[in-house]
Length: 489
Image (cartoon, rainbow, N blue to C red):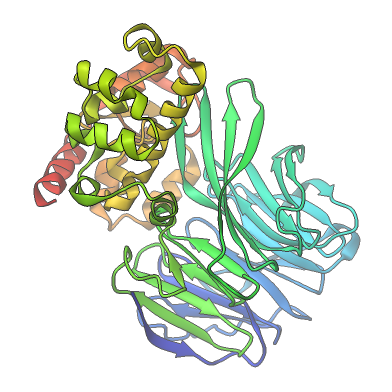
């Protein structure tokens, strides 16, 4: 459920975008201005409004630390603003001087992408404010852009209706043509990464003038190949879907016939901007129930679509399922031919989650390759659905997406942007306890990361950066937090 807590009425034209940082809310408008608010009480800051663009401001976005704000405009520039003083730090002129419609920071704040009305893209090195590379898609307007959580690639969407995946060399990794046949309005990466076997998976949401919200999976294979597939097409809205955004934990997805929407990264709040010149601030009263046509828990929607969870079993962690629960799940998934075999081998929830192609073939004697693949695909969906149970994402192993039993910390390469991010959130003691500075930023299930290290050339599963050592440090604080959570649930 959501409740409206305040309405901001300072803009004199359509509100085109809104963006949250930890302590700030930024909005931009056709009135050529940006307005900056304190995210605690939504009072306007003394240096607001920001007036540096000559025409409509289409988009704005914060750097990871919230120290800088980027905005782009019909005046063919992307302006970098200091959020300390409100002063202009830099003006980036788009190649070709075409109106700039979209801009996006990478999560590590090392890069900034801007997209224009002539289909061109500019990739900027943010620390130096220098143009690094350009790209283009002919005969279209770039209107959507989002970086992956690993900062190594980004997705763009255009009025032509296509979604395109790019790397930092401006190579097109994948093109999904006619993703929205009347044009893309917005696209956004989910903040989490799913890893397993030889595949790393990202999730992307996109919306368009066709009144559809789509959820995509992008699989990156160890060979370097990428494959994009449609997971769900959500048809609950009867008007063009103009904007969408994930919550910071990836558990919720908001979309609507509003020009802009954004989740606060630190509070249960959503900001929406509209063509009526206003910005509404909504409070989430219960993030997992009652979407009211505005708020959509992504994985809950998937469960509803597929009709999987039922009865008391849906309230249990999969790892806590009994053998009977597993049998019931097999029946619901159309895998009744495996029930007797699983019962004979005492397969409970824990065993189910640990199944591999090898164990299915050699120990359970499932000879059909198709049946093995179907079962493992269903098991992966179960792992993804764990967010529906309200499990905090930091309690799930990034590799297995299962609740961790023996969380450990892996040592990785330290990035200055990570330091900046952690300093910004230094008051959040739990974060710093879970993710010490000398790590790659993640805790893992001990067995999973040991297996990863032995087969993956000692690179971080989440960042692909080298692990400085194979030494694993038990994360006692996280283990105790998981224990307390399990006791209370």
